[in-house]
Image (cartoon, rainbow over all chains, first blue to last red; front, top):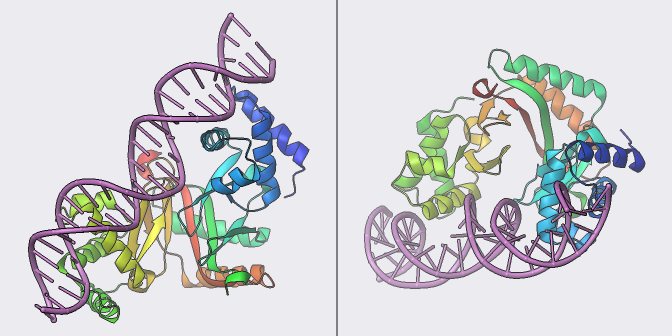
Length: 147
Length: 147
DNA sequence: CTACTTGCAAATGCTTTGCAGGAGA
DNA sequence: TCTCCTGCAAAGCATTTGCAAGTAG
């Protein structure tokens, strides 16, 4: 999925409006950084990339944007919390996590693989009483730089 | 995979010996609790189940056992860190994570599904310079109690 | 004006560490 | 005895929160 930045902003703006949140300049910038990054980003990284907001505002904005469903947390190999645009904005994807440096990058699988996977998961959980909302599939290994 | 508790202890004992760690009574109990739980367990839960060790020893033991490869950390829906025996001890498996209460439970997929999945992942990452060590596949949804 | 945001600093809460006493080989 | 382990308390860190000032509508 390739959503134009202008479309992303339109969606986020609407979601914010629905929740009585202002889509401030700071929040727009955060969204742009996350979309452009094409990988989950940590708060420290955001602070370096956009020193106009304080750390606390950063955390608050991430929580707000997550609560309206346009941003989501990602936990990788290290304990650092990373953030990325929700799948609604950038599409369903997976992560490859470097177990050495902790870096996280996105990748996608074909629709047919996703379909087979969802089928296998729902088959595996029939009778468990668990209702599936989504799956998370990451690969763990070593990135090019850390091999 | 069903590894008898005695076998588990034998493996862990050997790993500890190799690393000049003592396989103390406290550590044996921790391993037993983790194996019996059949799901990842948090430190607070461990403290309730086995109040003989202090919190700091708990953390230290988990770190030690993780460093010798017999225990691994699991991050679920909430931020709580959970621990489980390494896959070498209890076999490859996946987690179903309740997005409401944060509970994590184990489940398994058939060997053929795992094989197809590994193939799809390695196909998806050819040329990326990333070397895959393992995959992590979890389902997120609602458990029976939280529906 | 009124409500939502921000910065700053203090407070949390989980996890780690220093140190002295305790236990196993 | 020598080394590793444990408990206790203090320290670290990432994240959260209270409060007063700032700003958009």
